[in-house]
Length: 309
Image (cartoon, rainbow, N blue to C red; front, top):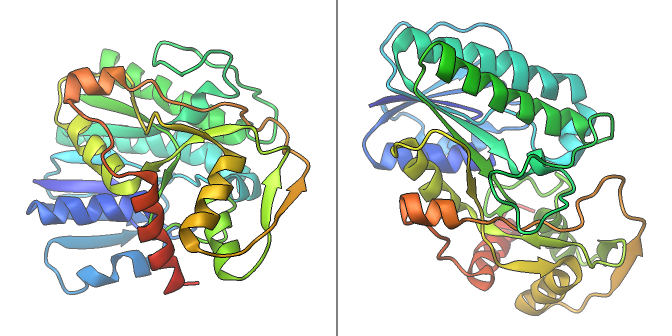
């Protein structure tokens, strides 16, 4: 097939591009490289299976050759990025999603929206199921990202129901692995970077807030599975193994063999206190669940980061 991946030079997008090329597909990556990097795709240089289009997807784009699938991953995704780029984040969720839906409609292509667990906000139920509507502060510091994705889901459903576009929606929970930008502010790259730079580990609050970490290869397998299934409503993809941030810091220190102390800082505004996906839907529809352990995934991530820090 000929497949478009918006944001295909980013962390998750580049791994997805690798997997699609590995299956023999031709991939068109559309990226403006605000947060993505050409380095993530340089190992495909010279391949006739990859075409890179440097373009801001919030502006219309026309591709003449037939397209079969569109994976819409374009968006700043880390708090540092979307708080620095709030308008661009809102525009890619609204205008960007509108543009790729128009592309899908024109080519009669199936389209998958990469949404996020952030649509649940700071959740009042635990774990988070797909039928939970969320607890989001639209005017808080995270609102630009949360609401961009909530709007994106709404317009995808509108195109599905009104224009009969063939759509899929995933909600991605915390994902990690090689190619994460080590300065993007999220907990895994932050801790890995601090370990490799011989710095203390920074813990926000008391470190009792929880996260659930999914290795990128597991996520990509789930994304591709959702695209090819027949289910059209949102599906959670993530690892349901929940861990506190303090426990996670202890684990990464142990795995790395480093001797580090923890430094505690004030908790950011609207930081979710608990985050754990209910993946029973993905398990029943896709027979999907993560298989890479946190220990194995962290070793691979630290090994990669050690060569790129």
